Length: 497
Ligand SMILES: Nc1ncnc2c1ncn2[C@@H]1O[C@H](COP(=O)(O)OP(=O)(O)OP(=O)(O)O)[C@@H](O)[C@H]1O
Ligand SMILES: [Mg+2]
Ligand SMILES: [Zn+2]
Image (tube, rainbow, N blue to C red; front, side, top):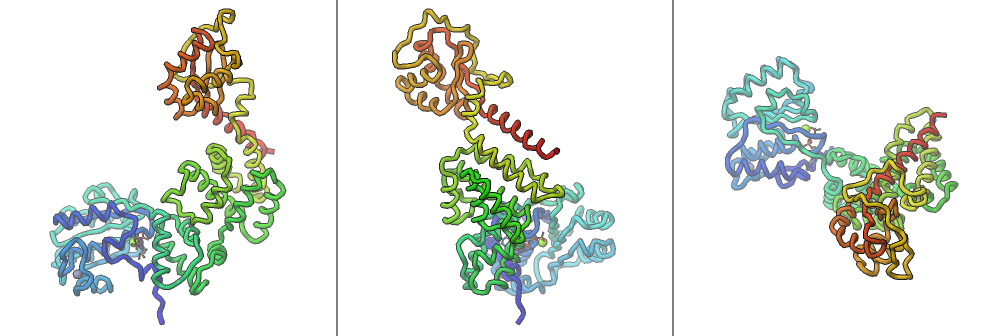
């Protein structure tokens, strides 16, 4: 028995079967509803996201013999013939192999004949950027005066190679990569339909590997099923795709937080000995830390991350007690360091990269590092809220409450009593007294917050320190970034031995 690949069996047959391109489907359906069909379309976008499929559905819709809505009926002779690829009025041309002028001419010759069975002849030019210049010119002439019974659909993965003269005569649709959650959803649907069972989370491996192409995802699923049979096990998928297991990645990341360099190096060594290469480990680390970063921002599982409950729980546990920027620092460093792995000693590079990540995690509490750095470096620019005030006249000041030390931290304690909403917010931030000014080192969001409360803060500052006390908010993020940049430079200098 012949086996038809999943991608073919699951080619969408109606508009509503098309996944992940709602803006395009809605526009085309609308134009059908109001009978405003264009005569030339340009479908651009990455491979395997539905361009050819949608061109065929459009052909069906315009040629369906008993269409009552925008959808083709799927049952009339024309619909069936189109599904079977035997409809004479659809002319599919692969420009990659038939881009020559002779073929183009003979195709264009047929343009003037009426359709045989349907209302429209539909020309689908796949990979249309591959047409030769002569072929493009000939085609352009046709586009300029298209006889009313023709529809041209140009499909291409490289829109920038389509000349403007052609492009401007087409209605253009940019197909997007299919989101991971929609890919996993479709793979599940396919397996459920074909009575194939699976471990939780297996499809996220496939979706990641397919990188937005549903066809690629379905081809990988074909391979997986060929290998696994009726049940898809996580381990098998990992083997087939050649990705590093999640436990390995969790182990490496955990070792950083546990101060256990030996363990991390040992896991890396073991994984490489199993036949994985450094890039696979690197990619896995980036991917996992990215998930952690997003989870930290979202504070729950966002709809666009398909992780599975178990992985979600494991990552949440791994992140306990971490701040957002600690994770971001690691991702940032990893991305910057990618080039290192291309050197002649990838294993050494990966080890150094890992040790650097470990060192970087020592900077976890950058706020604390900053506050012990002997106050702010001059290079940090002060923001608008700054006011120029002379130093306080020490002798005249009176301390309102004995229990508060007369320094920046003391003032925060004081505010916590007088104006808890602001005081509590300040408690988590670095505050300093500089030249008679109370300075808060904050990120952009809290910046705004402080501007709203500035008058109140000044009032209490005057009460606490004396009337002339100034107030300023500085971008604490800048300080963090500077430290990080410095650290990365230092780390990089290690490689220029
Ligand atoms: N948006 C989608 N909705 C549902 N299935 C899709 C979609 N995109 C791709 N597929 C699946 O992938 C197969 C191939 O899709 P299609 O030929 O339409 O992709 P394409 O964008 O034309 O790719 P290429 O640029 O390589 O020609 C379909 O038969 C279907 O199984
Ligand atoms: Mg195609
Ligand atoms: Zn029909």
